[in-house]
Image 1 (spheres, rainbow, N blue to C red):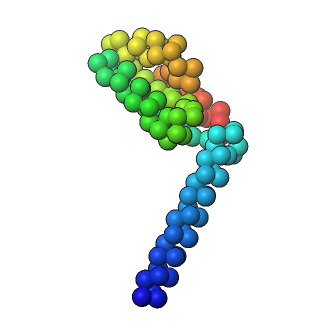
Image 2: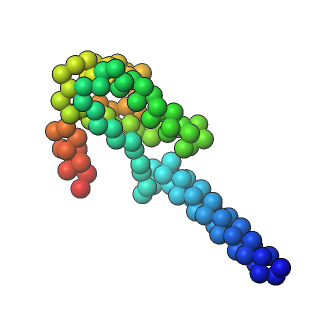
Image 3: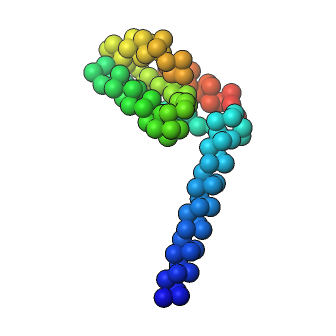
Amino acid sequence: MEILFYSLLCFFALYGFAQMASQVLGYFGRCGGALYACTVLTVKNQQDSVEGIVRSAVWSGLGRTGGRHVGDVVVVDLGSDDETVSILNSLAEEYEFLHVMDKQEYIQRIQNMV
């Protein structure tokens, strides 16, 4: 019985520590500290589904932050020849955190970050 008690005690202590660490790391991520995450999606010829994909990423981001904010969502178009890019540009007007770019622009931005 004593082993069960100590096992449960250790489990809850570790769980509490993990929750605390998650909150601290989440705080720094929201406050523009060293941690920063964004969602990067790549698409090509997805005119029928791209709006749903982007809106799903937005709701997922809201879910991760408890509805407080959405991190940047970057959509990289890999050379669509349908209406994908125009749909993405319309969504970018609706969401200020949505950034649409082509493959070359994305590579250039990544290289500038390093």
